[in-house]
Image (tube, rainbow over all chains, first blue to last red; front, side):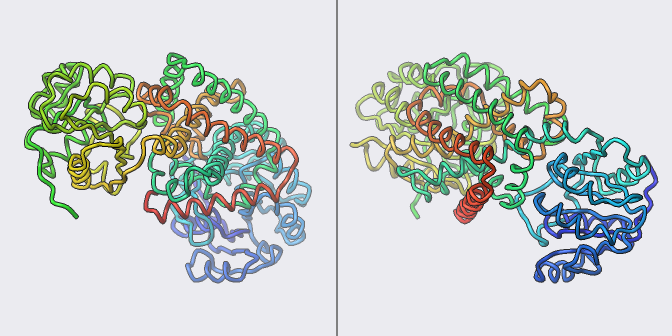
Length: 295
Length: 295
């Protein structure tokens, strides 16, 4: 598809699930000659060095990005602005700065103002993940067969977009270019709302008086367990997603509640035909997901 | 735990996911010397015979249960009453009749009146399943490590309950005895509500104007795909579950919508602390499910 040229020095800011997975795949595919990792917590840095997916570590974003031609922000959305401000003076000329956040308009709002002239900011979002977090959660195959969406604002350097696209393809992903606003709407329905609903039902189940938690745990195989898996995702990361994609999430949530209220009425009034029709229709959607190889 | 004595002849009424899985595990563990299968559709009967998890087949419930000492109803809840009425004259003395339905009060209401004196009716529910249906979907391991809940009404023959419990244990499950009403409440939250919500969000996603279906399929890995899997479950079976456990489902759905509306408000008013607190709490619940080995 395209020749990939390894980066000289890649700085990973944040060493959780995505950061560590990027480290592993960069090692395996030689995506960068040197990998520098940044994490606030000493235990995280030590674990990352011990596991071996980074070469050097520092708690200071500025120290990490020095001399790096690729900088990837892998932190919860809420800290992007502070990190961008802290590292801006140390960014190398012509470096590519990107991120992996699940919301893109907010990242552009928070990071773009801190990007110096001559440095290229290309926001990105690998649509991949698990319910596990931390430096031990990563693995090189996380991005394989998944989509990575880039949302370069108008005027972004085309070569930087091409080079970052090649990087993600070398990591196993298929790259898609999209407008930030549309990205946030698409992800609100395919990712943010599902997580919100999963968190909510697990909360509802935990608060019941007539059914004990032990019973909920024991009989989770009937469907509930899939929701608990999603609802085990990183609390801070997800708090920040909802705070930073509020309008799109509220729009999708409004539609969902409207539909659910109609479904409630369908059950109350024993409308068997309407129920079956909905259930047949959703089965078709599953076929679409399976055919798109994202099952 | 207990000595299991194989049944002479087991009649499986319905040859879908659960019926075929029962056939396979009965073959592997010799739970019955002969297995007779009942299905309305000729293609289903032929497929079952060809696959080999039954010995004989008939479209007629009465013909199937003749001489059987174990009869298992594995059909959607809505047809139980008609099948019970059709087979009642042909049931052998001292036979055990059971079922695998996801709702238990309705099964007792529909089946018990048709059970002749001297025949033992022990309602049951293996809490196991996949999103696939039909005679080709079954496999012998489906019940392994899962719970099977029996809900014998007061006065049920104790030996029949013991013998059926031993059958399910031999199939790999752990047996729990519960009151039918409590069962229906527990399953409303651990299984029925999760399915309802999954069906609903997949419907909501399919109806969007600004996000295309192709986009929903492509980016499903962000969380949505788990919901589409659940929402691909058998439409008729699930229609009947909601029609037959209406009160408990509406009760749980009411609580869920109440909680979701509060969560909507939390997002609208930017209450970061409340969001994070909920997300931390639900993560603990996941730990409980994992520890209960139902993950």
